[in-house]
Image 1 (cartoon, rainbow, N blue to C red):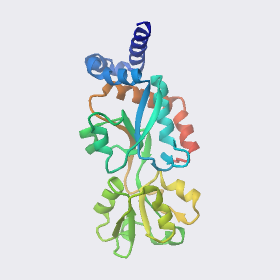
Image 2: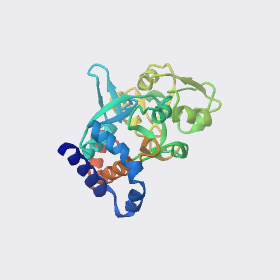
Image 3: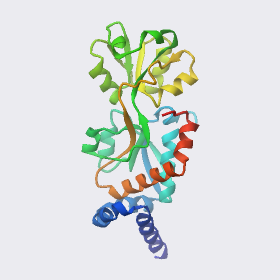
Image 4: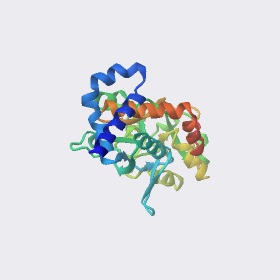
Length: 273
């Protein structure tokens, strides 16, 4: 009984501490409904985090060790620390991301790993504040980098554009490159090597992902890295009704911005934007 009382008091203290003055009214109004998810996580003593594990350097699953690493993996661990619990990562995929978030019973508490904030996602689910700049760009062979200086250079039938299925990369390619030859390949992390080997010419990717591959494979280039085709931000995705968890996530992100830990993580993983 003492343990249960202690847990409840700790939870109340955490919620009140992390709710800023600008959201105190919202916390009061939603306390009964929103605290259930946080209480569930604390009672479980584990934060369940969905991630694709195919997006270096944000979220990657090392099959040999059975572990995840990356910028977003460390961000999720910081959120678990704020809650005072352990973290367990659960594999999801880009085609199943939304259905996994909305699944009943829940597959995980939130999803992380290079997830761009969009109006469509915000209509169906909750998204955190943005914490990393994002935008579409390309990878190509270094020897061909002079050929691709604009979307018009890519949007030609002879240019083979490879994308992973179910995410915004495929959607961007289908919308903006109607004349190019679009190749859908199921394993995102394999595409850069396939480009380098000549299996396709261009990969649609993000400014968060491209520098990693350019740095680690001299065969590759990102000639439009400084001129992304669009601009956005990466956030954390969860189902509606988890407002209290969302407040804790946003408060943790704000703290990481303020104390410099987010900047240090960007530097660690070579995220220059």
